[in-house]
Length: 173
Image (cartoon, rainbow, N blue to C red):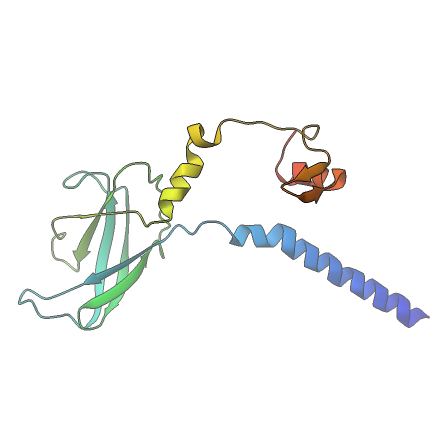
């Protein structure tokens, strides 16, 4: 009899740990990474592909020339036959709004920054994210628990209990 009580207590602890990890720890790992993948081709002054590890300073500007870097980091980059790939933001997260054009400056070792700077461009599906942020598209809505209590949403049942939990998770009034 005591063994069953201990097993039930142990299972309860496991269930608690599972829910704690699922609802409190996991959301922190689902944030958008503040990194940008970038690949380049590096040659020496004679046009020969570089091999080896080089120090590269990457900087992001809001102007195509001149100006002050809004973000920068130096990385030790492994270059193979001139080709390299880095994640900008590995050492210093890229925390820019991306609400205007930006340009990438690349400086290898003690050389001057390469010209021209590289315009940062979007990827296809990022255009859809822009649509989701447009107020004209989604409108301005506020809801409270009294707005969503029970019923049917797109053929899926939504109970009053689920609505209250939804309000609490979304910090709705």
